[in-house]
Length: 67
Image (cartoon, rainbow, N blue to C red; front, side, top):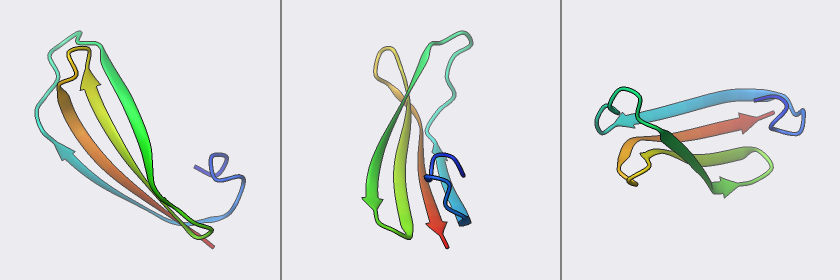
């Protein structure tokens, strides 16, 4: 997280995860991340875990707060 934030000090990381359903064993899963809000002190990112058939298994919202 420290390197991904251009080496700025991180004050807090908040993670909200919603698992929709389990991925089958040996299923190939893709991860897609999209920024929601980017500012000097707060970054919010949405993360989706999807299968090759574009079925969503999990959704996460990550909030990073910098000093």
